[in-house]
Image (cartoon, rainbow, N blue to C red):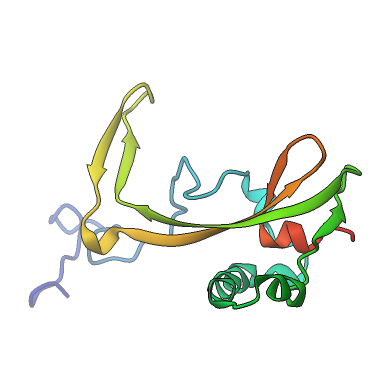
Length: 157
């Protein structure tokens, strides 16, 4: 129903009804060329087991708790974050710091057809997104390795 009347056909001449603004269409998959806020392919972000399903919520709780902790070292022990561990490649890791960044997206880019140029748009206030990012920085004997909470808790001690 559309303002008291219904359109019976797409062309107005009595043809069989087609998908128009009064007729349901089959859901289509969105066409998206990028993954927002991610740096790795999606297959690397699939949960490996049931313990990883709510890891984003656990990370948010970790950030809030760590920021408020009067004893950060004890907080890390309670969260089972290893201070010294062995990486999958055999490197010995030593925890140096916990980094928490506040990220606010205030603009968006859209590529033009062909991808050589793009369009930039500042975001209106209701579309601005805010998030916090957590990195646990380890030294591996050669350089620094930044791990997320899941990667750090899976290290072998």
